[in-house]
Length: 323
Image 1 (cartoon, rainbow, N blue to C red):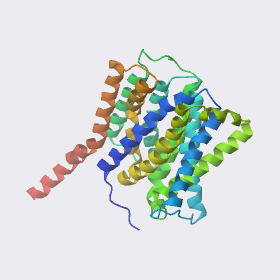
Image 2: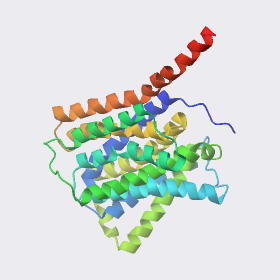
Image 3: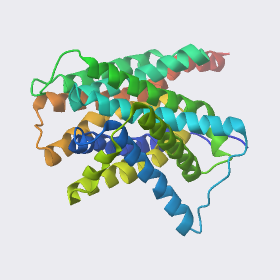
Image 4: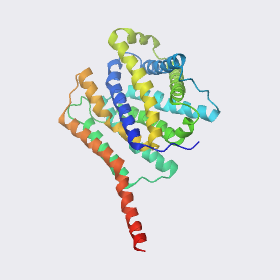
């Protein structure tokens, strides 16, 4: 089956919707962080996401679960789920104990650079100058947001290392999608793919919880009140199930692992907005300036190569015309 033609504008738009949902997950996670065991919180989030797809398959006549066709597919789906969900969220929750959500946001802003680096090292694809500039500019914007003086905690600490481990998990996932996503999509629909990924993440986290002696009894906090119930359902269904399904669609639309990851740089914007209403955190001019910088970086990344290609192509066309 031939690959579908890329549509980077549509893909980027969908990726921005995912960024909004994932940005909201930071303050939502902050509502529950510290109230129960981190592993238990992660298990609850992805178990709910997995059950959401089970309900979809049971009651939907249009969508049915596709069986895994071979061991390679099973490995890729499991690896994508464990890296993006289990690794990413688990280490992010651990980071909350040592650092602020703003600083976690700037480390998440490293995802485009790390993805681009992975593509360069593994596939030997050299990034263009506009892409490199855009990624660097986006990191500057994310840094402006994260190191705003109004942030409660600043300076290097163990939380930054945990957050970096989490981002590396997401970069691994995004690379798998960029490299094998189209092939997997020819055999599995988005819902089946996400079901297997969330299932693998839930199993992996259960294993971690049993090995580390996680306090499973702390899960009672999740049903203490309506706010906690709404929070965990939002994390599981909106910020996980729906968001990751949309993310796979975005990656398949763009066929470019870096351009979709660039959308993640607006996470601080959505995190800041939700945190303002949910947790009463401040929005400052410095943070807004950082957001504007990130948006400019996105625009440069999206259109920069077009001008570079024109500069290379036009002299050749002129020579042919002269001949």
